[in-house]
Length: 260
Image (cartoon, rainbow, N blue to C red):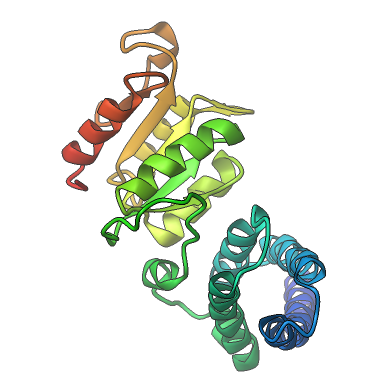
């Protein structure tokens, strides 16, 4: 047996164990959601259990070659992470995620690994509105946010939701690239400061990859156009200025990218 065969065998074992765990855990969460709907279990304790489940499954999936399950688990974790309390509407959304996870887990390894239309699946998942506002006309537009700063991220989310756009957040530029390749968002908005990389670096990386170079990209920054820190930003990228000009810049970006 070759080293490659051993590696493949080990990978299959880990994959099979994860799918088995996911199947059992998702089934248990379905039962929990049913009990929470009937209020036979406390909502606050149920929320903590759901958050632990989503965080655990997401962490485990990220280390495996499973684009579909990576997307499903990360979106569920992002959806539920900031939920302050459960409502029937949120429980209904969580059930949609659990149904999708159970469907993949019950189909086994072949389903988990096969090529699927990830962008369509991603857009079919519930997108949580985190702000109270009159319901805008919802558009089939998804914007990926790569903004580590929570306060600024919330401001951008509010603006997007007021326009009826879906938004989804990722943790860093490395996860952003993988997500963009698989789900093809209609637009990416990245902060200037992303840790090891800058927003300019991310924009350049996306420009250099054939499958992501046409994804509209906007940089959120306090620097004005022409600043030395912005040298190298792809010509097609838009700049969103923090402060009073943000709303205007965002509207111009939507118009330029054909999203308004």
